[in-house]
Each structure stands twice: as structure tokens, then as C-alpha cells.
Length: 183
Image 1 (tube, rainbow, N blue to C red):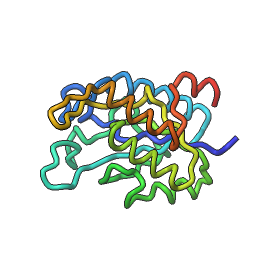
Image 2 (image 1 turned 90 degrees about the vertical axis):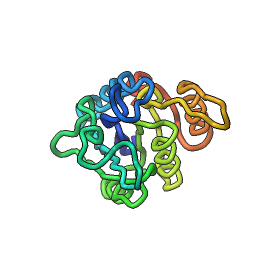
Image 3 (image 1 turned 180 degrees about the vertical axis):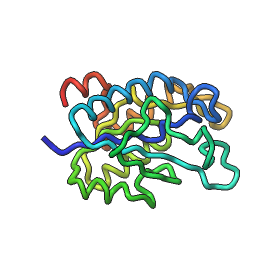
Image 4 (image 1 turned 120 degrees about the vertical axis):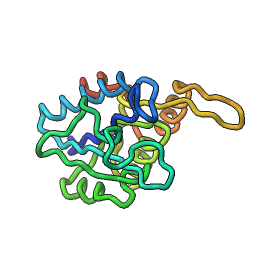
């Protein structure tokens, strides 16, 4: 079996109800991510938490030092788990993520988190391009509605479209229960 790590991307307070950039289904996605986290911990498999802080001028969420930027309690890291700070959607960009995965001889990554349409997409594509086998747990991710050219695209459609594209080439996309039964 390939050495596998769980990567939990940006499950942070600002994405939850009352936060500055709420995602549809954030609580349900966090619960599934927590289930995956529990399974990885029980088997002593590597877990990496990605923590996004926005440094760009005019950023409206994930502001450094705010409660909204903190990792949500449902997936909070414990002693010994790695937390990687990032400032861009791609969790590999200008971080130690690739170096950390390579140092542990990780061949496969399982990705959960938020936002499907941005950081999950960017991180999944980068992981695949770097040669990692990638699994995305679709029900452990969340998205939000988008608007383009006067057309509103519902969050469920945004989520499905991005995951469908990733499933074509970049990753195996599955649900948490199925993954945990077969891993």
C-alpha cells in the first residue's frame, strides 16, 4: 500500500455560519473531514493541516490574528501534527508542503477542505502535477455560489463542476465513507 497522508485545507472559522465568507454545507463537510481525521489518527497515518492567512490588500477574510482565520475546532490539530501556513490558494506555493511530504516518503495524498472551487482545486492539481496520487473526499469539501456575467451558479453546481473536472485527470473523487471502507 502506498504511504498516504491526509491534507486538511483551510477548514477555518470564516467559512462557517457567522464567518466572513461562509461556504454552503461547511458544517457537514467539516464533520466528514473530522471522520477522515479520526481514522488517520487511529492508524497513526500522517496528517497535515493547511492554515490560510490572507496578506493581500483588501482581503475580507482569513485576516491574520483574527478568530475567523483560526482552524475550526472540528479538525483542530493535536500535538505532533504538522500545520503549514499558506498565503495563496495552492497549498504548495511558497510553502514547505512538498518538502514535508517527500521527507515522509508520501506517495498518495487525501485532500479535504474548503473551498472546492479555489484552494481544493489548486492544491489537487498541484499535487497531481508533482507526481502524487490524489484522492479528494467530495463530501468533506465545501463551496459557495458564484456569479459570472449576470448568471448565478448555485454552490452545489459549482462544487460538482469542479469535482467532475478534477475526477477526469487529477484525482480519484470519492465520498468519505467509501474511502474509509477501502483504504
